[in-house]
Image (cartoon, rainbow, N blue to C red; front, side, top):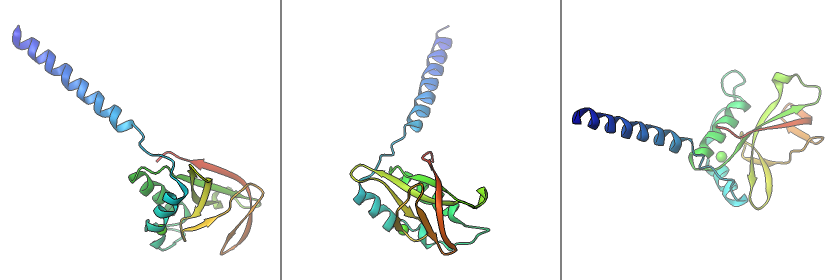
Length: 142
Ligand SMILES: [Ca+2]
């Protein structure tokens, strides 16, 4: 009887530990950065050193990798999907942004680390031309 009680207590303790681990893993430690820390991060992150390849590593890969790398240092970063006027849905462009605590939303082209202006109705310049932005979507989850 006492051994059964010990096993029951052990089982409960193991379950508590298991659920506590799940809760701890789900706490999102990422925070919105200051402008300076976002700039420092993007300047030191090496994603921009990848080579662009339309079939292997394109704008989506650059943006996903920067967002992931930011999460590793607890910086909240968004994968940003830009939709251009007159361009097919699958051919939109991905960049990244930070909602900085001191200067608000800022955008970077992750292929070059260049800070870029982005707003609906504005234009985005790519090597292939200048495109009117008709929608901006933010994806914050890593
Ligand atoms: Ca960089």
